[in-house]
Length: 319
Ligand code: ACO
Image (cartoon, rainbow, N blue to C red; front, side, top):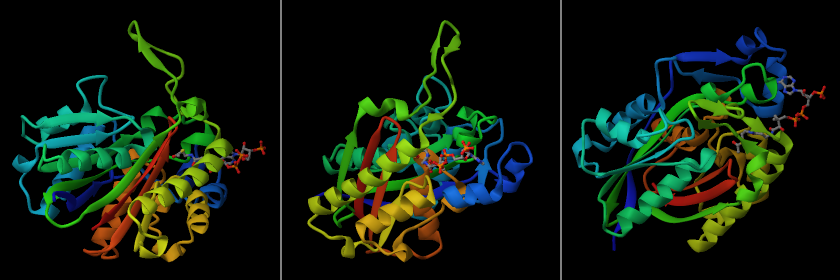
């Protein structure tokens, strides 16, 4: 039987660190408000010259190094992003060229903050079918470019970054199960409604959000999809060593962990340092917990995402 297994993880954060106090100097907000409502203390913001594929390249190079594999082994790239470098070619193709490889399949996945969970689930299917042997699955975002920095209700919530995994065919279990969902009727509660037409952006090119609507929906579906994925694998929450939910807001994560019945000591939290990096948030948190030694080989990890669309999903894996 062919399984897909994580051979290495990597991440990248842009150099520029912006604290809540920095934001309070340019808009009517405060460190106390942001921390109490979201748990966020600081975020990294990309330089004007950096694109999603530039950051993805750094994360993928780190993941390949951790896996002890050359880029030439990669025969599939799945790139989760809502902030692609350009309309086309896909950021996955641009990344492939930057890695100096060619010939394998490469495409983007657009599922906003659930993007990495979607991409990992898809890569698992490609590998388990025997079609591919070695995939780079990456989430990378420059959300800072689609934020209205005059809108304090959205701009304080997000940051930029990238996270990646090398997923390889293996005889030992890796990804144990996954579940993906979407409900397009909820498109309006979180969107960037602008579209490019005739050389112009028609409509707003900034994030629009019904914060309380997102909050309630996210907590409910993260809990539901985590349970559905555990049931698919015939496992319970007590079998899970680490829960890595989408890093949007510490209050959403706390409420979800409480509903699921997993103690907070087993939830990986990076939103305080990275803010919400959308499709990059789950692989960034995964890489942090691998590199600081919390996540060890053989442990069971539950990843869960929720984001615009609305989309949501979870992946259960043995690291
Ligand atoms: N600084 C100071 N005050 C602010 C700020 C800010 N940055 N933003 C809003 N306020 C004010 C509002 O203007 C409002 O003032 P008013 O009472 O005078 O009208 C007050 O704070 C309360 O605003 P609410 O929007 O009601 O605040 P709420 O308690 O709902 O918190 C928040 C807002 C943090 C956005 C919350 O709704 C939330 O966490 N929602 C989840 C959204 C989220 O995480 N989105 C991420 C993207 S979605 C995803 O990744 C799945």
